Structures are given as structure tokens and as C-alpha cells.
Image 1: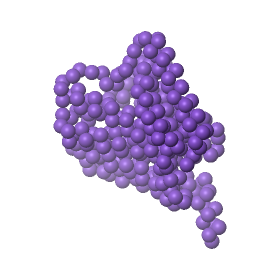
Image 2: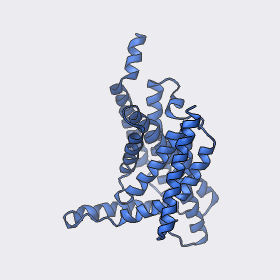
Image 3: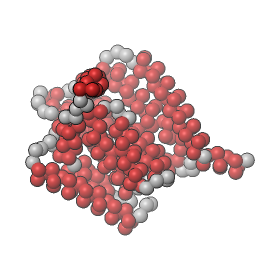
Image 4: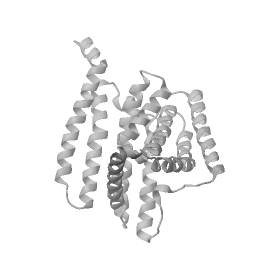
Length: 286
């Protein structure tokens, strides 16, 4: 009987079933909560926070609790190989901003052609609607509102998305293919699942950075912190912008037309990832 349970827990089909069942159940509960909180913007934030928790945090924990020993550690909640990895991650998120904005600019200029005008119009309408909602959610001028936004818009998505896309998906892929392929595939799916075509390239680039940080640090804490740093920066900048009436393009912060700045950003970004790889080879996984 024990051998049967062991074989069942290690079965790929069983693990997929557990995850999809947990995801479906949580999605249904999240949908019910969303319908209940259909009032003002504060209620919408509460709904989003609960739904994100149910869809991105709960299913991975259920999956690993049922199918793995030491589930939290196996998900990636381990001490980073090097404390320096956290500093490297912070610097990476800053120095890669020009590259991120270049990809954003390229993405926004993409044209489907006349044959797909209706599809392009629909995608732009959906993204404009999502952008307007996000802007409304970011408009707070109290410290309590800032903390609430940091929780709902920055922290919960950072934990949930890293659990799902790095802790579960990337690790599952890396057990079946090359680690670099796993990073790129999980980054692609991470960006695709947001269903925002005109932000696809910069979001995939972010997914690549987070994926390599997780792989080379051996710890989900590293990618969670960097993801939170990325989301939280936009929340904090928007707070001061709205509170003090400062007109600033948050989405294109760090954008530049200087070829030299872009080249420097590329060199330093790649260099830091290579440095992370060297740390990983030297100190190994803990």
C-alpha cells in the first residue's frame, strides 16, 4: 500500500490532476467572491487580492503538500545560495529598465496589418480597459492606501506568480528538459497568461530575469523579492505622483533613446546574470 501511494504521488498524471482540480475549485470560489465584491474600487481590490491568493498561491501549496515531502522547501522556499544574489537581483531590476522600455516601445508599435484590424482593435480595447482599471486602483493619497496597494498589487501577485510560474512550472519543466529551455518556456507562459499582447515582450523579459534569479539562487525568495520590488516601485511612484500632483509616465520610467545607455544596460544585465551563474557553480544549491 505504501509503495502504491509512493508511485501515485510521483505520477505526472496524478500531479496534473491534483493541480487542475485545486485550480478549478479555487477559481470557482474566486469567481463567487468577485461577484460578491462588485462595489467600489476598494471592494474590487479586496476581490483581486483574494482571487489572486486562491488562483496562484493555494493550488501550488495543495499540489506539493499532497505529492511531495517537505513541500515548502521543494517549492523553492530555501535560503539563497548567496546573500549577494539579493543585491544582484535589485541591481538587475534597475539596470534593465532601459531594455525593458525598449521592448515596451517595440511591442506597442507592433501592427497586425489590415487583415487583422478587428483583432488589433479588440486587443487594444481590452488593454485600455485593464490599464484604466489599474490606474484607478493605484490612485491613493493616504499612507494606509499605499500599504493596501502594496499588499494587493505588489506582494500577493509577487508571491503567487512566483509560486506558480517559477516554483511549479519552471521546476516541472527543468526536470524534463534543459534548464535554460525551462526558464524561457516558463517566461513565455508567464507573459502569455496575462493576456496583454502589447505588454508581452517586456513581461517576458521580466520573466526571464526572475527565472534566472530563481534558478541560480536556488531560492524562490530571491525572485519573489525582485518581483515585489518591480511591482512595488510602480505602486510607490504612483502614490507620490497622485498625492503631490506630479505628472509622470510610470509605465515608461527609465526609457531612453541613447544607444550607449541601451548598450550599457544590455552588457550589465547579461553580466549580472553570468555572475549569478558563477555564484551558483561555486557555492551550489543549499
